[in-house]
Image (cartoon, rainbow, N blue to C red):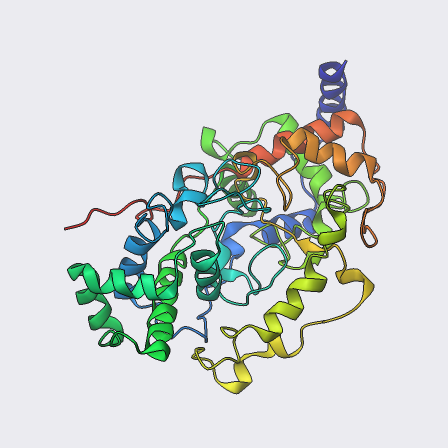
Length: 392
């Protein structure tokens, strides 16, 4: 029956006078342009990290990102949870390092455009996020002094660190150790800023449409189901997708309560309501002494909303790029498949904590299926030169 319904929809479109299945109105083309990767602005500098765009720091950070010695068990690295072969995720419901965390590992592809980091936004820079994961007992469980000791023991690391940041601190210099630890995080951020989204089949399709031509190559065509799913995606009245997943990264980067909390642990899942308070007092935030930002460059921190019912149970809207490859889903990975994700939007149950923003989606079962099929067109290859490096 589903296949018959799709066929009937396709025939209705194709038989309309002078119409094709993928005709787009000027207003729809503008929506497609807004989602197109060609509309992605240049990566802005991170004012908190003066080394963020230093190629030497990026290559150093690449080595650190894949180094399993930076963990208490010698088996865990940043790449353990952010594997380039899995779109920089780990394929697990809950991130697993030295222990098992209570959060799903999101992709870091395109994360350099983010303002807030972690699902609850408790960090305001990529380098401070890297520091938190390094010291977290369930992730890498590695103390800052241990990081600096490794930088001393590894001659290549010592040489690279000195060329970028200057001499390593003396043993026993606690403040110097923290500053060196911060520099370690800033090098990792410099690498992660190179993990950029790549064009998908959707992007090549949109490029052809914006050029006023029909997609011809197989890598720029959408199937009928994909094209129909895209139409549903663009319709706020039907799917509501664009409310949270807009722009060329398919996310607005803000926090929403969609009733996705784990009902068994809802009382501890305040999300943004708790995360923003942590960000404001974080020793490594934009206003902290380890930040390279000027006082007038921390507006996001200064004007962050710190209270309100809408923050309770709200988590960051993730990018939908490569979404078909980044499951399990939601902040705690309790949803296994995209079908189950879409079912969540079909049922629109109330939130176990706070107030859900979801409203009933006015879509048929076939349209929900086509929406899922469309999301597969957002897949793209891993960025070049972001895999494990070779040590000389």
